[in-house]
Every structure is written in C-alpha cells, then in structure tokens.
Image (cartoon, rainbow, N blue to C red; front, side, top):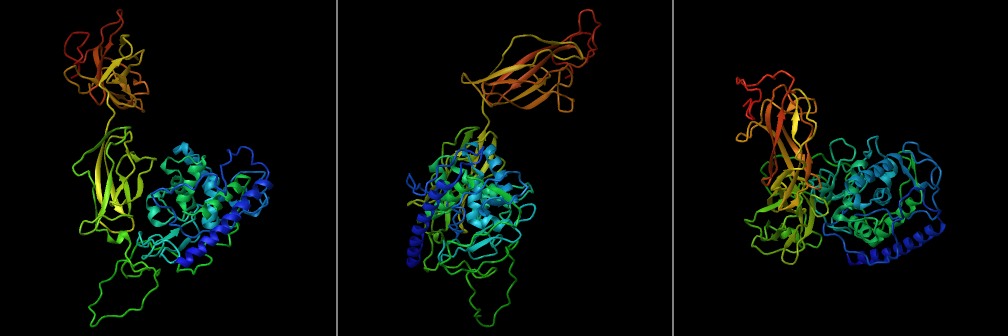
Length: 587
C-alpha cells in the first residue's frame, strides 16, 4: 500500500500540473463564453485559497477510480442551435454531449434552481462530473427514458488500491455481496445512493442507472450543507465531497471551464468515451456485469459427514455465501468492533420544537463495543423518517457523521418544518449491522394567543345573497404579529355551542357547494388572514362566525341576514314566529 500511495502521489503531481497547463491554455485560446451564460465559476488549478476540508458525510463515489482525460486545448465552437433533440455536429467532438444526457443535466439544474435557489448549481458542473465519472454514460448509451443500456459499475472497493467499503446493499445494485462498487453514470456507491437517490424522470423510483435520476441526485448531493456553488470555497468543498482528491478537483474544474465556453447536443450513443483512468497502473478487480434484484435466500444445507473444504472464491465474486471478509491487513476496522449505538445524553429527554424553529437539543449517538468501550472514527448515518418536512441544517433528511475520540457523533441541528406532528430520527453504523438508536421528535403548530378583526364594519346580507365584505382577522403572539399560523373558521350554532351550524351563512368549496367549516387557513407575514367570501341561504337571523388558532387565539364575528324593510318576512328554520332567529337557529 505504501508503494501504491507513492505512485498515486507522483501521478497526482503530474496530473495537477497538466490540469494547470490545460486551464491556462483554455483561458488563452478560447473565445468569450456563450451569450446568456451565467457568470464564470471561480476556478483555479493553482488554488488561490487552501483546499477546504471535506464534509463529514463521506463522499458520493467512495473515492472510486475516474477518467483522467483532459479537455482539448482548442476552444469548442458554440453550436448555432442549443435546442435539445436537434443534434448538431459542429465544434470539437468533446464539446458534444449526448442529447438525453444533456437534457438530464439541464433538467436537474432547473429543479435545483427552484428547490435550492441559494445553491446556484450550473448544469456544466454536472456535465463535468458525468464526463469524469462515466464518459457521459459511455457516450450516451442510454434508452429513451435515460436508463443506461448496460450497467456502469466500478471496481469493488476492497481496500486493494481503493477504499475499503464492505457490502451495504446485499448486492442489489452492484451484484457484489462482499464489497460495494460505484454504480451508474454518476458513480454513486450504494450506501450513498440509499439516502441521496432521487426520482428525476417521474417514474416513481430512484434508479442509479438512470441518468435523470442520477443527475438530480448528484445535484442535491452537491447542494447540501447550504453550499453556494457560485463561491470558490463551497464549489471546491462540493467537488471534493464527491471524490476526495485534488487531482479530481482540478480535472472537474477544467471540464467545467471547457463546457462553459460552448457545448452542443449530439445523438445518443455517438459521444466519445475517455481512454485513461486513474487506476490504469493498478490491477483490475472483478466487476460484476449485472446487479441482482435481491440477495437470494440460501437453501438449507444437508448435514455434512465430514468438514468440507470448498475452494476459495475471489473477494468480488457475486453471491458468495462467505461471511463479511476481513480487511487485507487482517485487523478489524473500527466499525467491526461496534456492538451497538447508545444515546449519549438524551435518555428521557423530549424532543419538541415549534414549527419553523430549530430543536434546542442535538441528536447524537455513541458507538460502543460489547463491553461498553467507546469507538472512534466510525461513520454514523442519521435519517429523518415519517410524514414531516423537518430537516437537518442544509435542508437534507440524512446526515453521516464520524464519531469523535469519545465515540460520539452529533447530528447537524434538527430544524422543524411547517408541518406539525411527530416523526422519527434513526441512527445506524454505515456498512455494519450494529443495533442503532432512534428518537421521536414532535413539531407543535405555530401559536397565536390573540385574534382581532381588522375592521368594525357590520357584516350584513339579504337572504340568498352575498356578503359585501370579507372577514379579515389579525393574529398576534405575545404582542407580536404571528405569521404562518394555521387558523380554522367555523359558522357555529351559538356562543355556547361551537359545533358547525346547518343553516345560515356559508362558504363555498371548489365545486361551489356550501361549507361551514374551513381549515388550512394561514396568516401572512403580518399575521393577517382574509377569509373567502360568505354567502347567505334563505333563512334570516343573526349568526356567528368563530375563527381560532393554536395557542388559544379566538375571535367571534356577528353576521346578520335580514330582508329589506319593504320585503315580506323570510321563512324561519324554527317553529317560532320570530322573523329573526337567534344565533342558535337550526341547532
């Protein structure tokens, strides 16, 4: 391994130097960027700032091998047409991106622009990573829906020249039940895809072998942690989190610059495939051709009459029934020694926050051995599940953190969304079947302790007519405007009976039908909510509308339905002869 490390360092220095020369040459030789392109990314092979630290949640590819071909020095010629589906052949061959693959990158950029506008993700970054990871899905060998014609699977990550990542998906994606392998056009390892995967083509599933799904997943992955990719520091952090190598960083940046100068679509399957890889000087390990749908159930073995001596299988052989292999060094990894996770300090502590606020307590997990000793340098994955919009800081529902010297991993701060209710947060050891620890968290609705009408104008209407004004109320909490507070409006039977009336004024639903209870109302930034129009049926009388909010806010509004003085009396819903029934009429 030491000799290999030396080779990689020498090779890295050469590659970095080459990348620097390439970027300089591109800057000198290329014409200005295409009209309408966003401002150029701040890229520099020489790094004007120190290489930033990598996020604690690992990386997308497990530092798998990648293609090392540099962009051509000659400037690409921009296409006269940028319309997807109208491929053109002008310009440098490397500037052409297969039509479906290019469409996937641009659709991912558009979705991220709406979902995470502060990220400023350019599709050229996805194209650069797609080029380096898979040669744009092997030159665009994809079906019409974006699925690769054959799986793209990297070498097994068995520690022999690569990272050591034992099997986490039971071979479902990579066909390898011993070690993980990077999969798909964006080369996610299964353990990362398990939480980062997205459905980019709307077919209801997240498939790492589909370029739309993989591109959207890569976009979300690069936009986590609140990163702004228009800044050099966050851009570098995001790329290094994809593959933790300065060689990789420089290479991706050079392709971003190249694609920013001009690109065009080419027919699917006609793109070029790079020739050089970062593992060219290493022996290749076995690469399963197709993933299995699921781990097969072993049949019951017959009792052997004497100990069997089966031949040894290669470490990457799919379907091997042998137990989880030991690392090449013979020493167990820190994860191997973990027996279970425990809560470091939250036993019996309630996790509660108001909608829109941050939870005060941090969720954590401590990795321990069977005898209770803490284990450091273990990756713990925290996952939010349930019907909630709560997230960790950065907008993600999954975070992977390494344990510290005391064996403790603290998840990022938990942020309550706008949706009230309970949800779960679980923690597990990445790639290891140790018992995890879970938490239940509760989000309470935003409160308002006072409601008042914004106007004192009387609300009156003739039978069968429409009230001229709309009811508007303002909510406050401890004297301050209460924004984003949910409210309920009900036409009640009487001041003493808050159940919904069956006669009198009403709202209309989407189909024009009468409704006398409205939920889902929300106050605006000033704490104000305006109710929909009110209508009257044929019964005269004085009725009550009550608006309530969580936190105790309540206001009751009087509504009068009466015929003009010259008109005959309206029918009454009660046996009483009174032309103006009390608010409890119809109760």
